[in-house]
Amino acid sequence: MAHPNEMHALTLTELAQCLTAGDFSARELTESMLERIANLDGELNAMLTVTSDDALAAADRADRHRAEGKAGSLTGLPIVHKDIFCTRGVRTSCGSRMLENFVSPYDATVVERLANAGVVMLGKSNMDEFAMGSSNETSYFGPVNNPWDHTLSPGGSSGGSAAAVAARMAPAATGTDTGGSIRQPAALTGTVGLKPTYGRVSRYGMIAFASSLDQAGVITRSAADAALLLQAMAGFDERDSTSVDQPVPDYVAAIDKPLKGLRVGVVRQHFDAGLDEKTGARVKDAIAALEAQGAVTREVDLPNLELSVPTYYVVAPAECSSNLSRFDGVRFGHRVNDAKDLFDLYCRSRGEGFGAEVKRRIMTGTYVLSAGYYDAYYLKAQKVRQLIADDFRKAFADVDLIAGPTTPTPAFKLGDKTDDPITMYLNDIYTIGANLAGLPGISVPCGLVDGLPVGLHLVGPHFGEGQLLNCAHRYQAETDWHTLCPEAYR
Ligand code: GLN
Image 1 (cartoon, rainbow, N blue to C red):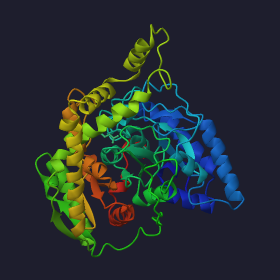
Image 2: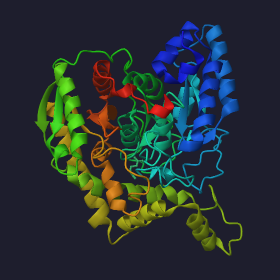
Image 3: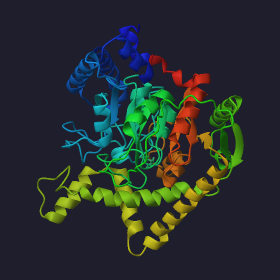
Image 4: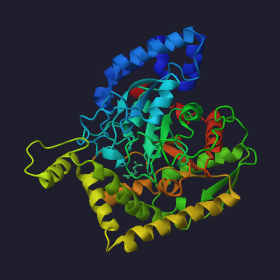
């Protein structure tokens, strides 16, 4: 039986077993997590809203369901939602002043499905404004500190979710990934980050950044935990026209297949200059560990990889400029109350409501979509995007999945890259390709570099998340990098 003081040390899968065994109640578990948040979040700033009363009520409901024999695999498990998911009656700020006081009248599908499965929401996590960033420093509510070292960034944009899980304030959290925002913060905080195939999980009620790239996923402590949550989140939703009507396999049951014969592609361009040497060494060790389990590696080529960041920074801003036009001071969010006329209302509400990075993206996006430049930028970027997707398609003719680094370096200092957007953007060089091609990806802790975690990145073909989870789980069965916890949070 787990001691109440140790609940935070358990994974979601372990907590589920304890709840089933009656070692403790969902209320006791929720109380213990809320207490940790109250004690620890002051130094991390991972949480934007803590919903203590709702959480305790949901935990009591979960306990009642269990007593009535109606518990499912997620009943009573506490998690945190990134503040980009709409939650009925609870503020959804998206990390922006624009939505500082926005309360959604409905739940996002992800929130609804998890709640229906009995999950207890502890609160909403900090994030880069409108998910635009790689360091959580664009949040209107201030940066998040990395639990491994408070002077470092936890990555972004799901930095609050990643820090909350790394600091054991929640066993799991949701996130969104447009160019790497689940996998990059997972790598920099020593957690697991899964971005499913585009269309696998509904985007309904997830505030849009770049609609052809955005995808919801999870940050957890193990691949098994990610499988558990994905099981409940995935599946067709008629309210999202890009959600794919394809059966959801049993991810949890298929997670422990031996890796013998698994064909793993190692991308030549991943180990070029730009990758920190020690990070590369840890990733190579991890690939060797897969080989030791019988996986067969071969080199693959993604010749257009270096075009992925520039392509993304045309496509994503274009879509964001269109999506964010709805924030006009009339329908949603921040509104100046002394506007001279309609034009003044638009200009000043948006001028005050949005931060610098969001404005930079809107201006870039408007420019690349404008009549005179559309062909030269937006159309060209769409063509290059196709080339990148083709590169992956060719690679997957020969391999089952691709393995490489998630990020070029371990966590960097807060403030280090804020004046240099290009350097900041390059953080996503290994992750953005999967978004452009709509592929699933997972980051798994694979070692420490100077005491800081780094991630192994696995990318699979469309709807290959089962395979990714299987490979990650088998890797975790033989290694213990995912069990490491920053000392202050043990
Ligand atoms: N870092 C990338 C950006 O700033 C990706 C963000 C994301 O995945 N939401 O746009």
